[in-house]
Image (cartoon, rainbow, N blue to C red; front, side):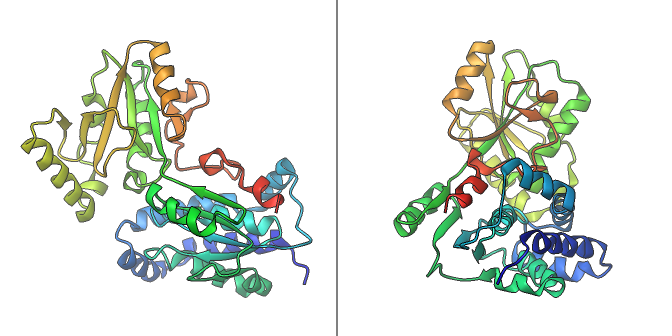
Length: 337
């Protein structure tokens, strides 16, 4: 049966707006938090508010026009395996499957089984045909293609099970902030959002900052002093205390404000409650370091986007519909099926 993908997606957007306006949303939020202790009400609100802005007619039509999207006359069953690191992390994949006229078979992460199914169920009340377009599954038994997001470790299994199908398989990626040394305190306050939103668990969260040799790393720590969203979250603070103890026992040089642990480390990826930094001598040295990490970086951030290809501080967790994870155009992939 023919269907209008745009109406189905708009209905999901309406479901998000209705939830945000619902005075009883705290009950649902508590269920979600019980399942995933990282999905705090503040972070749920942030994710939902961002998506309700995207799932409106104007941005969706602009997306359709830019990508020359037309509804498939031969719908495919596309398996979507979701990560569970931040709220609604897999919604873009589902929306991309729907907007191209395909059907989504969604395997939710084990710690994220409530929010998206709730939104789709609410949307089905307005657009009943949506219930035939999205299925919640435990196994992808009859998928024609797969979009899977996970760690470097789980990616090996994804390739083993789904390598024979058309696929997008995403591995670990992290994001990096580049400082010139001339940033104002206001600019660093914007960077704080990129560091701590979703507790730094997103692939678009900054896990590493690259600073000039004469830059004082404690300038970054000072803006995180007494950050209550971190200090009062027991899962986060347990991680901080663990890594702090390890650094003290092993006498590893570090800075801390008792909220975040900051160490000079060549690794792009930093553990939870930690922030790695490295120093650069000049622009050539900076470019070389970023080139070395090219296949591990999700996004680069800089003050007002001064570094080529970067986005401004404060914008990491506000991707547009055309900001595709790992730089792989999901719509092009789906159109090719």
